[in-house]
Image (cartoon, rainbow, N blue to C red; front, top):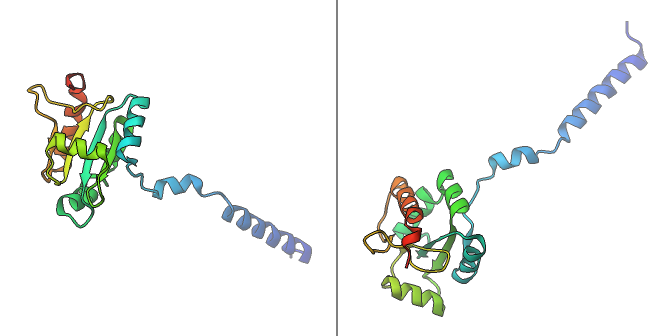
Length: 165
């Protein structure tokens, strides 16, 4: 039969093992549960970052989560892990909040794209020029599009960067 001191040592050893295992850092697990998000910029800081990083910009003229197209993009496209990774890696994501007064640069871009105050996605090269397809039409959309169509727009914008005027 084990002695009283042997039982106490065994209990202390078990308690220490439980304490140590419960104190292990969980930071290696937290990144698994943390959803990565798109890094959104305002127009001017985003343009500065585009020049610094030599990346094109995705510009989202945004009306907020109560507007159907914007809500659909937030839920189905901007929440997609592949889209998030591609935007954060290959683009500078700029969001222009149409619920607020636009500054001069935002107004000029909206006028150039003839947004008429509507939601729109468009692309700028790192120099701030509108990215256009081979035929000269800007790569943009005001429509609700699928995730795959959105990725196609990203691919098209990257493929047409040299054609930007």
